[in-house]
Amino acid sequence: MHLRLTSRAPVALIGAVGLSVLLSACGGGSSSTKDTAAGGGASAGSNDVCAPYKAFGDLKGKTVSIYTSIVTPEDTPQINSYKPFEDCTGVTVKYEGDKSFETQVLVRARAGNPPDLAIVPQPGLLKQLVTTGKVVKAPDAVSKNVDQYWTKDWKDYGTVDGTFYAAPLGANLKSLVWYSPSEFKEKGIEVPKTLDELKAVTDKLAQGGRKPWCAGIASGEATGWVVTDWMEDMMLRQSGPDTYDKWVKHEIPFNGPESTGALDAVGAYMKNPAYFNGGLGNVKSIASTTFQDGGLPILDGTCSLHRQASFYAANWPEGTKVAEDGDVFAFYLPGKTADDKPVLGAGEFIAAFNDRPEVQAFQTYLSSADWANAKAKATPLGGWVSANKGLDPANLVSPIDKLAATTFQDKNAVFRFDGSDQMPAAIGSNAFWKQATAWIVGQSTKDTVDKIEAAWPKS
Image 1 (cartoon, rainbow, N blue to C red):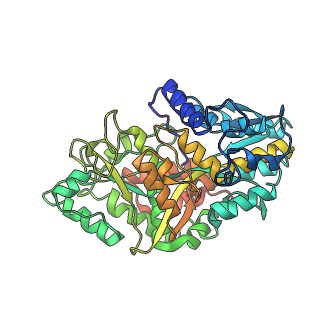
Image 2: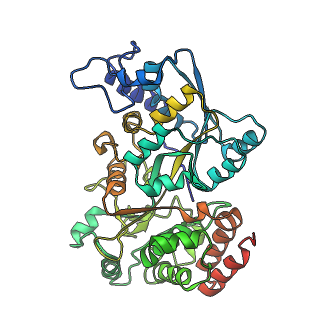
């Protein structure tokens, strides 16, 4: 499931600091020729940092609209990241955030009233938008940027029926395990590099009857998605990315041996009463604990391990130090070997409904390393990362964001998008969640995968 968690940071602080970072970088921001470059930066020694934007032509007085689900307070860093483009080109970006975006963007496209650009949070929604006939092919400059700055996996998620439409933007890393660095140091535990080592660490922590793992899957109507993320990670690790892709597309049955084996592998952890649910209760308490509270027992020492995405950093109480030497941190959920690097995550894509020159220029900027670094600088309190290989991790202030960025950029990383986000809604946001919840409270693996398979749409 793709989630966007709201930061607890005050809006005014984000806006003021983010804007000051950008303006100081552009020499005050009062001149249209002093700002962050979009196309690789101005040459060394040049005072005209807007020089690369001149390739876009005369765009002064033009307006580009962008529609998104990113709302207050997260919209402030997003809007500030557009300042270099606006100041250098003279284009005004009209930003519209809407909590009902995922429904309304389809309504607007079908009605013939779409925005110029939309930030789309799932490949499945992008495919639906393409079927309206209103999405336009990405320009060559955007395609070239994506070829340079992202892996092929990411470009594929922005491609529908062989046509490339949407460049990736932000991302979150799901293949993480949160832990207490001080506890690991005290007990002489090294961060595991393989799945076998993770099992050995778990068994060591479980000595004396302590339950080392904790989790919560309650999330309103979306209860159960935490289990689906666990299962997707295990599918990637046990069966590999090609089989994962077939599973997501239903080219192999949901109740086949691969899927069954992945859920059983999750069960070896989540349904093991010796492992779960530290500080919260028995295994069944996983279903009644909110996902926001699922990892908090790490802080009081009643739990040691919590598998959750990079966005979970926003859920630690104010004052918690999230760092390698802090109260909590995370490590990459390892693969079968130390060299295997399957990476599960989610992200956003920028789709266009218009090919006016100013729209294509803004698309090009958003697909560049320059925008990724401007966005990092405009987010001084952290909570944002991109898989853009041109992003300098030094521009990220949060240690967990830096960990996510370096994991995405690892040469051995093989990225796959959240599976339930790609499956039909009847499965990905319905049967999969519901049956995963039933499984946690006692339903067998066989009954679970059989019921999900039976719910799969026939056409």
